[in-house]
Length: 145
Image (cartoon, rainbow, N blue to C red; front, side, top):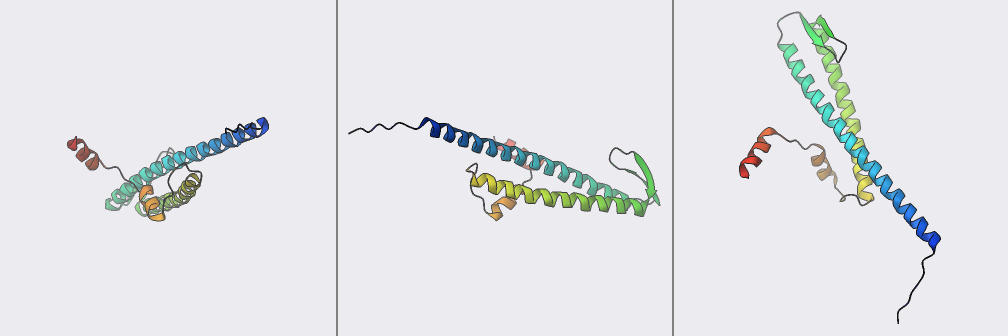
């Protein structure tokens, strides 16, 4: 025969609240993941610009060089001091990227636990964290079409 059961209205509300909470938490984690990833992209760009500045300053023949630091303006500094500033900035950027990478790994694991993505091993996670989109790759993809 057919059995009909009635759900307890109170448990339905509780179940829906739990589901809503779980979805909200997953969405919050996903938004944080995207924010962290965007910060990493910006820092990676800054790191590359810093590398280029270091190379340019090292090639300078003058004893003093002009250096722009953020929005604080243009400064004329002894070459060695400019190099030290840029190297210090580079270390700070690398530390920030390391911290964000650790956070991104945690977020990825939390999202996978919540079923918001596949469980990813450390090798695959490392590959995803260091993806690069280069113009040459995009151009070759366009030619294939």
